[in-house]
Image (cartoon, rainbow, N blue to C red):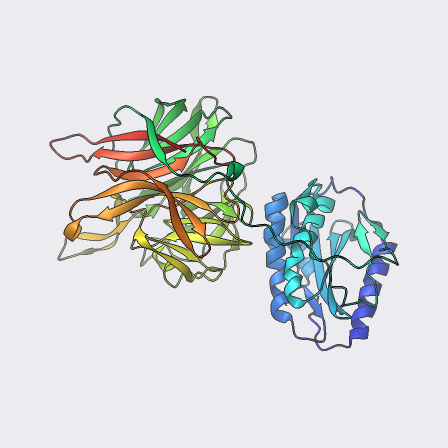
Length: 546
């Protein structure tokens, strides 16, 4: 669809009326149960006198993010120019094509979209939303995406899951009243509708369970000695009683433990040869079967050979390997957990854009590239240390930088906030690049830890991470576990443990849903670093938050 600029408003009205007429004449299925959740989105067209191309150009990307969050849709964004959008979608084997436009109607805007079933060429659904101003166009995508998810993909409650669209001001009349299309049946608004009252004030940030705010973290249990240096721990599965399966990891081993009450009991161990170096571990249900897989970023010499472990019976087996990406799960990205990756680099260990990764049954395929610039600081130092959360109405990345400061990044990857204290440092280092002759080894790179984001934090995220305090002249120091919550423009500490000379290397929440009073946290701690004369000793520790 071409982008048309500078046309008369009357032409816009005519096009909008023709669109509605076509929809009325076309058979639109009332139920979308037969459609797979795979849809291509074409660039939106602008039928306005004003130049709002900047706003219109971002609508497909924002709509794609919302459909992924609401319905778990597989969305393909089609580029402008070149072959027709229908041809491009068919070649990519996407069954549905969504095309849209923004029209100026009076003082407001109409956002109209039609979905075409490419196998039949018939209209699968038509949708519209109204916006009072240009700034309001993007806000209306929540309503539009919810209706698309419900009508095309049969995701019940999708429309009600998003915020309602703000009403069009009574002082901005629209001469041609658009028809709302619902399940293919048009319904006209009441001809004598009363003026819409002003909306109530927006609610404040969502609080944690019951409005509770954490104030203390106390130790309630620990495992026996683990003869390894543990560099992190991840919660794999939990149940309603608070029992959990967790995996802690050292350089070459994964240690799976069960948490029952305040007991932390060994379950099994998975070992890799000595030329492996496990850099990071996450847990996520990548195939939608209700059970989380364990995702491991593994460095073999100087090659990323990440792998996936899946539970089969009572054991975890490798179902994919040789994955040349550093794997990271963003806990809340556009409303849902999202797996992203970064390819291994040449000059640095990890280079290139951050991409969404999707499981195809045998391995991962690249999805869309995230817009954050990885050629500038802080993301130019690579993917380790990356997390995400919702801040107010927007999703932002949280990043532990190369100096162990927490940063909150804007949509382009620039820092909006940098913490004054240091967090997420790790004794875990790996070598990369050419050997430095004067030193006899390659350059060392630390593996930084990302914050864990509590479920239920809403628009003011609560995060968990070890704080690191360096000793005088870099000798000694201490670590402690802290809970930080976003408050207006900074992270503020809500609770923390006492500092310890033992190195806390990682931690994770055990709560499967909203985190509340009495919630538990599991942490990994190095009790004794190994040497030729003493064993490596670590433990898992259990904490309760009040």
